[in-house]
Length: 139
Image (tube, rainbow, N blue to C red; front, top):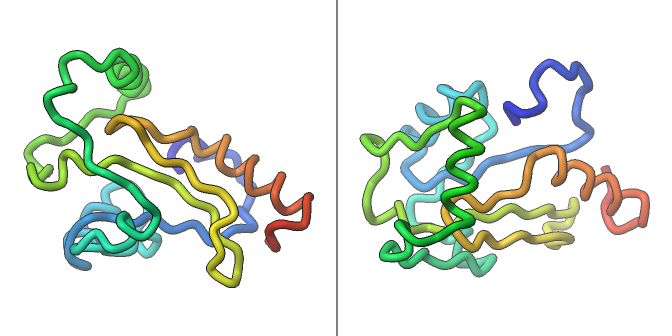
């Protein structure tokens, strides 16, 4: 969401972020990024399992070219991993993104292949608009 700050357009979507951790930890984490109230705590990673997100093989970290590229992009944009706040049992959880309709049906799903593999927010919003135009999503 930080990518779209300052655009001034209200989003016609209900955007939520699923965060590994207790409700208290999720609230604290999300408040640091101006997303308080948008985060859903999932301490047991049930939502991750439900949409088929797997763990990353941590031995790949030094060799994964796509991950290294994403890290460089994030660093250039001013973002970095806070390893002090990262629990090792959660560090391997691969990211994902989904667009659900009002009935809870997944209309689009992205399963990350490395820890930094999430599409840009702009791309996800465009996908939601495309689904809405095709009648697959009611905004």
